[in-house]
Length: 178
Image (cartoon, rainbow, N blue to C red; front, side, top):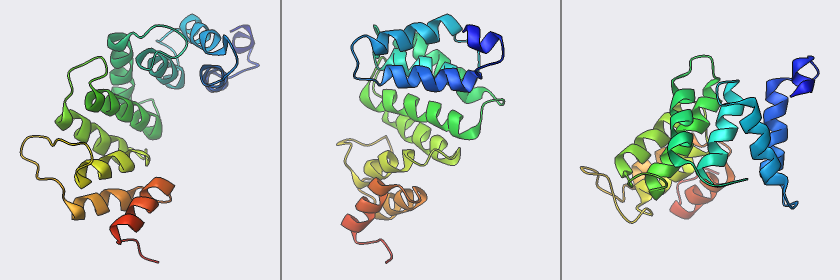
């Protein structure tokens, strides 16, 4: 915090440090990452807000606060000052929660829509989950959708660009151009 106040570290750097701590296997590191994010506060830079929200909805570094995490993710998604990929990451995290019923009732329609939004915002990793939906791997479908839909699955995977998981699914479907 002090390093940021004197201009030594940007808020993006603090977010990267906090993420490193949150994902570290070192004992106590995730707790330190969560504490750092909480001290900075959820009203700061969008990178910090997303990092805090992800730690809240995944129980990383402390107990879950699904409602608080979802509110922060929704705010970042609506924040025009946040970069498109960061907003896409927020949309994908909300989609994960809706798909898994993490802190909310499972809502496949919302999950599908949020993955599509994430992909439109440039978060290409969302293409994999969206493709799995259209392949029928979610075991259920949103009202009005007919799955599996191979064409929509292929389209989603192709939008994943160089994502290795998407490429593997395209290979499995036999639709990847060589």
